[in-house]
Amino acid sequence: LVLTFNVAHAWNIPRVVEAPTVTVPGAIECICAACGEIEIAECAFGDANGDGIVDSLDAALILRYDALIEDDLKPLYYILADTNGDGMVDSIDAAQILKLDALLLTAFESASFTYGQYADLCVEYYGYYDYDDADSDVSDGESGEPTDPAQAIIGAWTGLDGSHNPKTYQFFEDGTGTVTVVDLVYDVEWTLEDGVLNILKAVGDIEVYSEQVSCTIVADALVLTDAEGNNTAASSPCPSLAFPKPRLAGA
Image 1: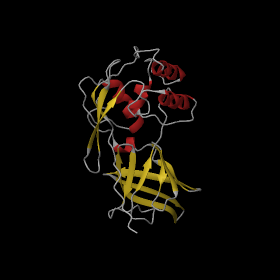
Image 2 (image 1 turned 135 degrees about the horizontal axis):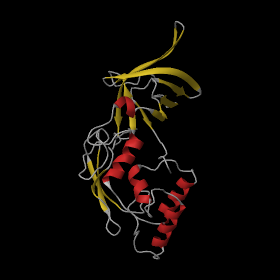
Image 3 (image 1 turned 135 degrees about the vertical axis):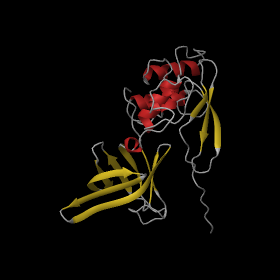
Image 4 (image 1 turned 90 degrees about the vertical axis):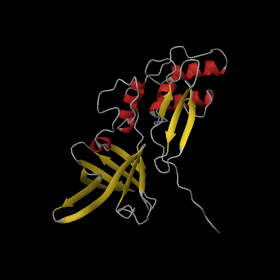
């Protein structure tokens, strides 16, 4: 029995190369940070799930998001889901999509896309936005260059460690945080210098948790590895990947 595993793509933040209009879909470009593969896809208002079709499935996703059942709507799809252009994603947008799907509407006349709006939402969601778009109106430091990594890492990151145990990192601005592995919660202190994340908590002279790893943020993944490519808190040679799922403010 031979098992073959392919490296999963780690897509960067989608770049909108052609903005959508109320009548014509736009285009996005995604680049894999691991292998460099480029994927081009359409983006259209109302396509909240990114499957290329505007239908009742998009309306259902929006209703779940509005009811706090679904808590992860990435910046691009947040804008595309806001079909009435009021800055919120809610049942009104879902109703608009259902009308379009039933041929009661021909277009979302109030929908709009600006690169500045997209950049702002990306900074809020991912912690950075690294494209220099012509009409982006975000301030310096929020567009064109990634933000300070020590700022980008602040927040909660959840996933599985190399032993497939649930693991959560929570980093606060004051240099404190928590590391949760299954049901064990460690109160820690952390520093990030030159891409090296140091996590340490000592009680008296007894060190109860220690981790020193290289830290990279790829798209919406926090990648932690030691010099040999191992996660120091895990027994597996695979690095730990953790994914944040913040809910956009104002939603």
